[in-house]
Length: 212
Ligand code: B12
Image (cartoon, rainbow, N blue to C red):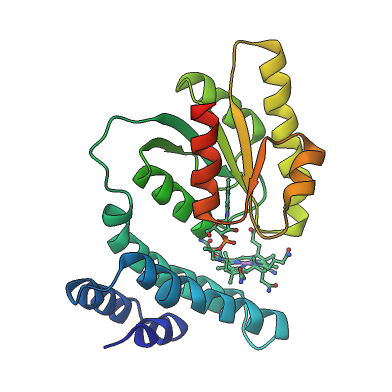
């Protein structure tokens, strides 16, 4: 039993093996964060490379993502465990037109583990939905995810919609963005309050917003 076996099971789209192997690693005392990074997330980079090379296609990409999700479902209660009173509320979602959700789900889990209440709007989220949910839940932070270069325009539209709503109402939220095509400069350019390159960076930014 090893993390490499989980990695391979993801690349073979073997959901049942992923489930069994992740449980076995946890029972053996392996750190859940290590299982996550080395067993579940790392093979997706391999999948992405094969997709770029043209040796693997969308259906396989989807099957690999589904296998990863089986593992994430097992890790979720552990990574999100916190007994404490929420330190803030985060609305999270993937922007309109973009269906990628694994990174967003990871960010949600880790924010929950850090003591935030997280309201997940899913993928392909209309900009106005972010505003409505932030108002409804009296949120402190809106977190937006995008994986596609072609989603960057939607990211800007969502951030602008939130900024306009802040100017027109009592809405008082910070906006953070994340996803591989984005960076700090882009966040500054579109008026977002922070960019986070990974889940720990999301927690760091979120904490700074509620402490400020
Ligand atoms: C799995 C996958 C899919 C699955 C998604 C399933 C799902 N439920 O998510 C499916 C099959 C649906 C898919 C479809 C497509 N995909 Co795709 N996909 C991937 C793949 C292999 C993995 C993505 C992933 O989950 N990564 C793992 C997670 C953990 O990483 P992450 O998302 O980056 O998240 C981390 C950080 O970015 C950050 N983060 C993320 N969100 C946020 C938010 C905030 C607020 C913060 C602070 C941080 C943060 O923290 C996360 C954790 O550390 C990538 C390749 C890759 N290496 O990434 C391609 C990739 C993203 N896809 C790509 C493409 C082209 C497509 C399609 C257009 C293909 C097609 N021709 O149809 C479609 C688009 C569908 C759509 N409208 O969205 C390209 C994008 C290229 C580009 N730059 O635009 C990639 C890079 C593949 C490639 N090498 O070409 N895809």
